[in-house]
Amino acid sequence: QVQLVESGGGLVQAGGSLSVSCAASGRTFGINVMGWFRQAPGKEREFVSAISGSGGIRRYADFVKGRFTISRDNAKNALYLQMNNLKPEDTAVYYCAARRGVGVSVSQYEYDYWGQGTQVTISS
Image 1: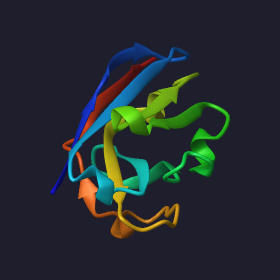
Image 2: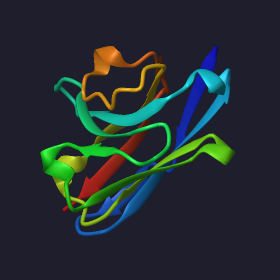
Image 3: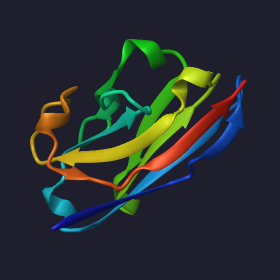
Image 4: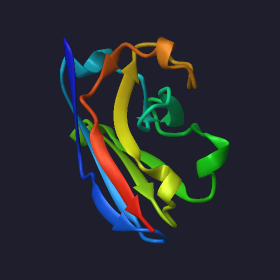
């Protein structure tokens, strides 16, 4: 089994920066693509970003392009999301996800493993 644990969430003022991390453990050889999703109160979970197994392919939701950067360190079994120029609408629980497949999918239904989420709150 694969376990994913997010960390780094917190409170930051609008315009500020925050980095969230995800540590993978267990059968990590089964992981290929990893990504980030988020869910705000009263809203559906939405795609934020994803990265290929090698780190060479990245996809971003339109609303975070130019502000967020996804990266991974496979030697550490870690996934990161650097968030800059944060906006109040970025407030959400951020979830780390991983899939066995090679496609850098934007669909939550294509992911096999999930973390518990970490709260990111942006104040005005």
